[in-house]
Image (spheres, helix red, strand yellow):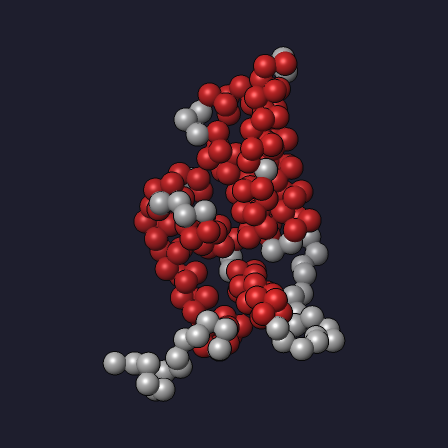
Length: 182
């Protein structure tokens, strides 16, 4: 690459590094895998930066590469990870621990979703993309995005770890039958 396109790419990465890493983290559930996935997607973007930078939205182009790289990860043989409900030897519960428990419950619930449903949930509700943008990113129809989101949300609603977090005192929700329903 010449100095111009290379400098443009470096500026793109500096300005946007944290967002694809966060998205990758939600897709993978592991900070190290998220960084590796982001680096893989950015390496692919670097190789074709002239085409990527000319697109309407280079960020969307790289996001699509990120989702594709994540899908490729499931095609390869890998060792599965077993998530635990709580860290060993937990101390007293304070606000930081509650937040960590909520986060762990959410990540465990996301990890239980099939890859496409997980990608739809992350893109739609974390990245706040429209159904059309998610469909474009995933290479499917908006109807597929809607059905995958519906199935994923139904699964998440029945996940025991999330039910405990939502119904517990952390979220302040009044359990059914205790004066909160009208």
